[in-house]
Structure formats: C-alpha cells, structure tokens
Length: 318
Image (cartoon, one colour):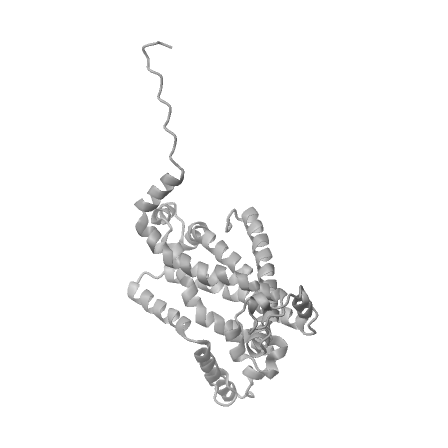
C-alpha cells in the first residue's frame, strides 16, 4: 500500500450505552410522556395485584390481612380439584369457549371484510355506527332485549311461532338453548366493536397491490384471497392466540344474567362458580387458587398455540 495513501479511519464506537439511551428518550420525550398513563395502569392494576396471589396458599382472613393469615400450602387447590361438580364446570366452560372460538371469533373478521368492500362512505359509516352501538350496552340491557324477543309470554319470536301454528318454546329456561343464546348475544354485542381492529389492519394494506392485481385480471375474490387475507393474517393470528390464552375466561356478568336453576346443567361455568363462592361466599383463598389455575392453563395453551402458529403460518406473538 502506498505510504501517501491515508489509512481508513476506524468507525467511531456506537454510543448505545445509558447516555445514548437518555438522549434518545429526551429527543422523543413527547412519546414517552404519552406512554406514562399506560405503564402506570399496567403497574398499578396488573402487576402490583399479582402479589396478592399468595393468598391462594393461605387461609386468608380479611381482618388479619395477608401478612398474618396462616399458610396452608395447596389445601385450596386440593379442595378445588376434588369438587364434585368440577367436571361439569370445566366441560361447560370449554364447550362455550369452543363455540365462541368457532362462531364468534370469525364474525368481526367477516364484518370487516364486508365493510371494506363498501364504497359509499355515508352508508359505510351508518352501518359502522349501528354495529358498534351494542358494545356500549350493559349485559342487563342485552338480557332485557333478549327477554323481549324470547320470552314465552310476550316474546316476538314465540308470537311468530304461535302464529305459524306451533307451541311456544320457553327458550330462556331450557338448558339445551342456553349455550346458543350466550354465543348469539355475545356475537350481537361485540362483533361490531371487535371489527375495528381488523378494519385498521385492512387500512394498512398497500392499495398498489390491488391495482397490480386488477391489471393482472384478478377478480374481487382473487384479490380477497391473495391480498386481503394475507395482509390481515398477522392480526388474525395475534387475536386468535390471545383468545386461546383466555379460553377459561368467559366472564361472569353475561352468563350470570342468563343463568337460572333450570339451566345450571349447561350454563354453570368456572366464572359463575367463582362469583358464588368468592363474592357471595367470601372464600377468597379458594377463588384465588381457581384464578391461578386458569392463568397457568391459559399461559400454557397460548405458548403451545404460539409455537404451532409460528411453524404453520410463520406468525406469532413473539
């Protein structure tokens, strides 16, 4: 090498330490300030309460507190696993979650795809407003609507059945109809709101892909199959994995509103049982043990489903 030719300067070490991080935070301080409320919510309402999970291993007394309540090990887990009706509770919980996964989960995807095809914005916004509205109704109001439709005395559906020459059916007090009612009312209430996520994913698809597909002669169905669905596949996978992780969480509010003594056989689930023994019965340690059991099962299912999803579709939560 010619001595007159200067040696190339060594690249300056990348400042990736604490000082560089602090400069980055200061430069984007507005975004980090906006992040504070969300982090505070997670820490205060999600992480700090995890410390209270220790009462699942205690004979918790609300007057003695966590620190002074005696430790009993796995007593409450044993009591839960030996509960005579545990098989019924688990079966009802899993079967209703399975029905929701099969029928309720695809509903917002289908609605988003249909709304995405609408070109008249006024009509599209009107439909969106109508389908979003039920989300803001409480389950008490939803039960009232359902009662007006299915009531054996004054229900609209039973009036139609009677006008056709058939006998009225007591839908709300027959166990065989309970799961259908739960899944159906859930679809009606939450489909519009859940579709927002998929509409946002659809908005992120590059329009030039559709233009290129039109030039190549692809019809609407081919565009849907080869562009739209692959474009929202990551969102679908993430939402599906989150749903699988919460497969044992049905929510006590909805089911408790529709549940009665005649429908316990098919409607009593883990959440309603937890409500009865925890809120009404005051057995806080037992309900915490049930909650830990549900969390562990949900975590294992989500991890397993995530690994399968990454192998099959290449998409996952992490």
